[in-house]
Image (cartoon, rainbow, N blue to C red; front, side, top):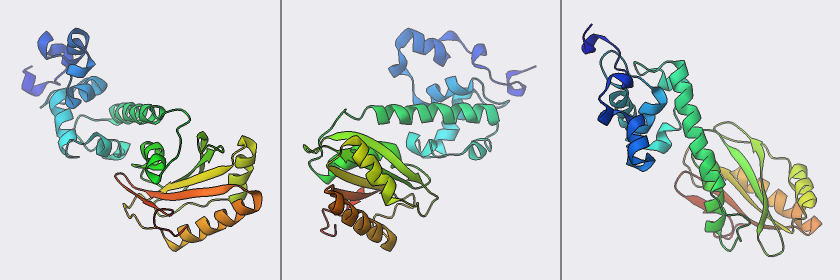
Length: 232
């Protein structure tokens, strides 16, 4: 059977063209994005190699890894040669990368400005397809002593219970909090419900002598700060 009519397996390539062997011989940094994905999927289809298939998948998202990480298993399986098992492997691999970015955030960073909050939360929620609400709990030096997901919602909103926020603040011994949630739509400006929630949490915090430092609306590339806009 000719190669045109058989599956292009990485094992059939010359050693110089095999991503696994290239990784061993030259190190992980020598591989292209397509070669790394090819290692995950193992083989292509009857017409193209794993690397060629990986290049085509990357081209569909303008060669952006973050955009690739947003594709669902169903979307990935629309590519010929990508079944459910390979799609799951791609999703799992990219999720590990996202979690690694999250761990790269410095321990106990100090919050001096809104950009500091953004730098902590953006790797966690910036590119999600659904809304999540997070709280940073701070000590009296404005250092982060804990960060916590409070709620998960859909594409257009998430519900937040103020009692949970301040119960956790008291447990952690926090003297201040900073809030952040993402807008999957990319819209930077807060909704009326965002404003009402912020006001509610600010008032509740004043009762407990826990200062609300800021509330950020976060997108993949930017953010809106209630404090910076003087509407806190």
